[in-house]
Image (cartoon, rainbow, N blue to C red; front, side, top):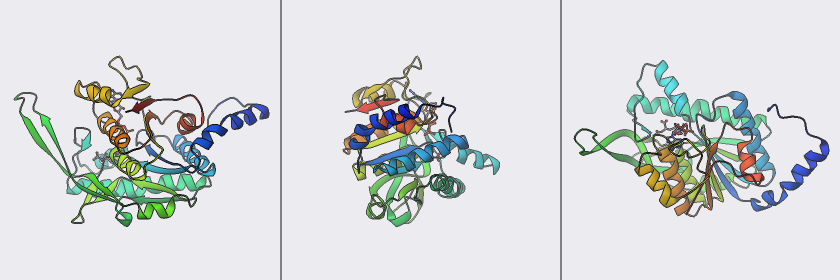
Length: 298
Ligand SMILES: Nc1ncnc2c1ncn2[C@@H]1O[C@H](COP(=O)(O)OP(=O)(O)O)[C@@H](O)[C@H]1O
Ligand SMILES: CC(=O)N[C@@H](CCC(=O)OP(=O)(O)O)C(=O)O
């Protein structure tokens, strides 16, 4: 746990009491929380995150966890001598890579997080988008401008998918029944091909389909940073698009912000990008007046 100073029982009671209106706001609401591979880093942070998720469930909030695992996939690929390549923030995924991606995401990481949540007293159910045909995807395409010729080129990302349809049948069996879905970002194509989906994109698709009250994207930076590396506390969709176009938002932050825009357009009420390494980031965001991270709004 954290090294925070011990507080008096009276202060503890006051803190709980002050959380009441926040708990009421999210009562029986679905909150999608994306836990990034970078934020997951240390075991004690991941265990503290799991405990917070169980606390949400205990207070009648319905958390749905989507996890990433980019750094963990990279580590395994390196161990096996397979190179990692990215374009537009997405992993170029060939046949050898998709096997490892599935093994790491739906296997080791998913079950580790399920274990942590259950250890904290929750009932987590680890799944991926292939289960119950939850997330169907089509092949993702991206274009890039060649810096020398200035010609736009289509990049072949291999087995990278773009969510097309979310079937909520399976999730609806779990949500509201004390079960905590923990989802790995893999999907199936119409022809049965497994696709690697960026975890932010996957979380946005699920949050959109569920019309979630909140989508929280937990990463390893305080939120969206400006050119001077200062946190931008609030960002409109229009300004977010500008920052992508001028290069202030780059790499892995691109799918994150695009996800936020998509989720808002699908009817998710609020989306926040925040630092998942801050102790109790989820509780701070949901159950206190102190908003952290970058809130993206319409
Ligand atoms: N404007 C920006 N503000 C914050 N982070 C940015 C920005 N542009 C690019 N990034 C990069 O995006 C990263 C977060 O994306 P990513 O590594 O995919 O995280 P995660 O594993 O949590 O999904 C940051 O660590 C940072 O390097
Ligand atoms: C297509 C694509 O890029 N998929 C990601 C899936 C995992 C992910 O998104 O993990 P983070 O959230 O930790 O970055 C990947 O292969 O790394």
